Length: 161
Ligand SMILES: [Zn+2]
Image (cartoon, rainbow, N blue to C red; front, side, top):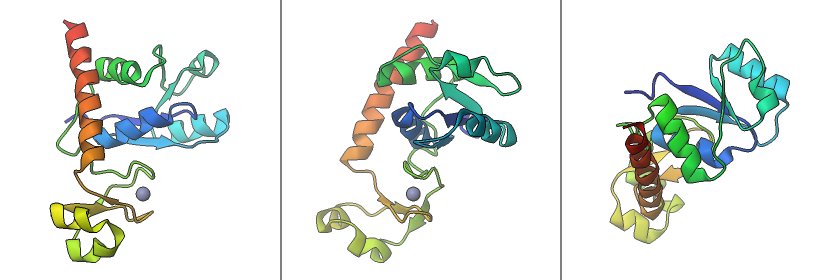
């Protein structure tokens, strides 16, 4: 299980990457607007690796920084998976994509009003974010994210060989 080992903080240009890392189960902070000094302070205090495409930021000492090469989302995930050995773990889809908070499994009856009726009838496992209240289930959005990740991560494995 690699997810417990890697903790990240993505810079403000890597919001989509952060979302996919959270989806995979990796504790990943992301703030749409944050000063570099604050980003580095949090990384240091919380022993997180900074992810960035900013070469100037990557030269800062005292904090582990990973400078991404890739520009496109698929390639960025591919690059990170190859570098850090990331994988879609058992705990995929257990973290809020928006807040990064670990999700809590909830009784379907408790969230019936929060999801479309069709969803409520189709799925029986629901998880909720304790911070923002968003409800998650393994529907189309989940499948699309899995498919994208499987493609990106498979390529990462291939390129290591
Ligand atoms: Zn949330």
